Image 1 (cartoon, chains in turn brown, green):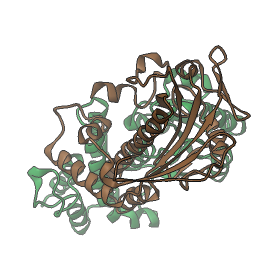
Image 2 (cartoon, chains in turn brown, green):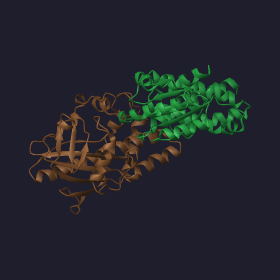
Image 3 (cartoon, chains in turn green, blue):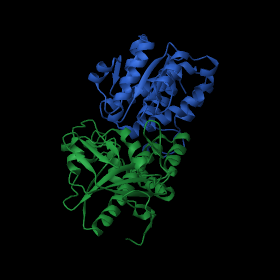
Image 4 (cartoon, chains in turn blue, yellow):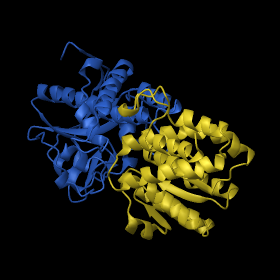
Length: 248
Length: 224
């Protein structure tokens, strides 16, 4: 593993798997200012220099406070039913939907992960908003979302290294709430993690706190493949990310 | 300085997002007074707070909202204008509290249960406030009970439901139906990335706003 990763593998907490916690160095969090601009919905070419400078300044401010961490647990023998769009794992039934189920159908193991930026990001955004700095608070919120994805990406890459050790390849990562996978399934995912959640908690309506957190699953198997994300395969036409990432 | 000129100065500052003298934005107004200073001066010159609200702030935010709807400006410029408006509003607050300036009505807004996104909802709240309405913001992850309690205390209010996630559209439907069952006469408007006019009809809401200006237009139509 990279020297800048502080990885602690904990005792086997689950029936079949292992639990791993990751504390990545902040320098590993990558935020593309251009993507932040894209999320602001300002057409490319119309971004004012003032705004570009502000985005770069705020990315630095965010990197100075963010406390990223991630964790994952591995479970064997998932039962995936593509026609029903479900996955049974450790006695829990996840309603993935058919698209996600078909992408995971060759999985021999399922890695459940959680990544978070910590509460510092939302505190920073709130501080700016309370001071009346609406634009700064908004941009920090976007940067926080990008950072959470970056932390999830680090977890994903680490999972790949673990899977490769046992001769397996991995899938893309999929999260409750996307591709029409009900967000309420997050309760089962957290229950499976048996407390290995990096301090992330769920609200009654299955949302994560701190807000800038990402949870999800990754399939591992000898025939799995990590691919480019393809919005065209998903029918959630009002998805927040659909056009923004594609256009940028 | 003439009254018209002072009101025009405030309008120009809010429209262009010039908060105060120290604000670096917009670059071509650097070092010049902003909405903060001009509003203070207008009050000192004896211009009524209701006139500042109606002839400068509401007009400015109307222009901002229209430019946003026409994609001539975008969220960042809108937020900067809202900040300038807030700076001016700070000077008018005492007059609202004393009752010297009347609001158009009360708008109760919240992001529906299961959704923690509040930027869009906040933006709508600020623009609606700038349009002369009082706003009661219930926050995020708001369930039916909380909306019903708020309506119970303010039966003349208009209610706005916001959602960003496609997964929370079902919660919006439940909340809309709960509200309409108990308070069928309360006007209900919805907004947010995943919703549209068809969804409004499907869940029994009265209005759909694709952007903050749409919310203002709907609200103003209720008192026209």
